[in-house]
Image (tube, rainbow, N blue to C red; front, side, top):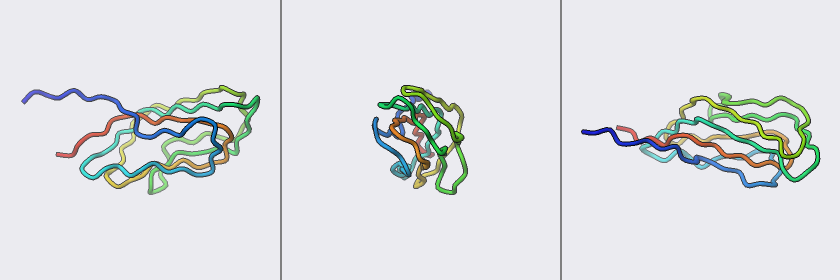
Length: 113
C-alpha cells in the first residue's frame, strides 16, 4: 500500500483585533491526533501593546509556548515552531492579557490506526 501524502492544516485561529484573556480550541476529533508544528501571532491595530505575558497549553496545563511580559509595537509578529501532540478530546488553550492580536496554529491532523 502506497503512503498517502500528509498536508499541514490550520488547527485553530483567533481573529484579528480581539483582546484575549482566555481562549480554547475545539477538541481534537475522535479518531485523530494533532501534531502542532507552528504558532504565528501578530499584535495588531494599535501603536504599542503591553502584555502581562501569555502561554499556549494543553488541557493538562503542560506548556507548549510561553511569551514573557513586555511591550510590543503594532504589527510585531512572533513565531513558535516545534512538535507537540494532542490526543483525541484534548484542547489547545491560550491565556494571558494581550491586547489586539491574532494567531494561527497549524500542524497535522492524523488519523489513528
